[in-house]
Image 1 (cartoon, one colour):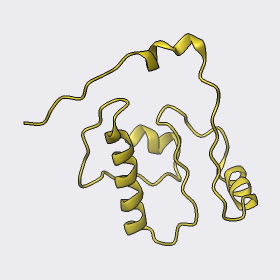
Image 2 (spheres, helix red, strand yellow; image 1 turned 90 degrees about the vertical axis):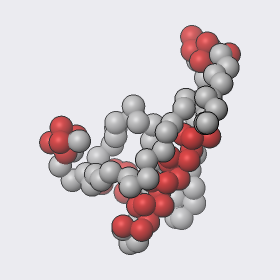
Image 3 (tube, helix red, strand yellow; image 1 turned 180 degrees about the vertical axis):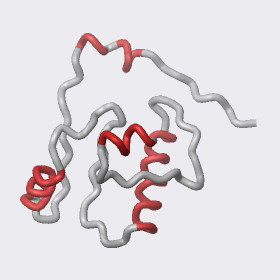
Length: 102
């Protein structure tokens, strides 16, 4: 976490008190996102915006640029999606079975 704070000094980082075991392409990915959103609301109720980016997508815009984009939405949601490249088709053709909790 420290290296992230060095690279992005205005970032706010904390560890979730109820970690979720995450399995790729499983509901648990969404569950972890929802847990984090809930924690953010509990800790910082004054936030106006929430941007949920993939963990591998580091911010490509600075805070001022992001703020202007979100303000122009005027309270509406924005979902950006791209066509799935054929070269990654094996990612959606493979079925992963989540381990059963005992």
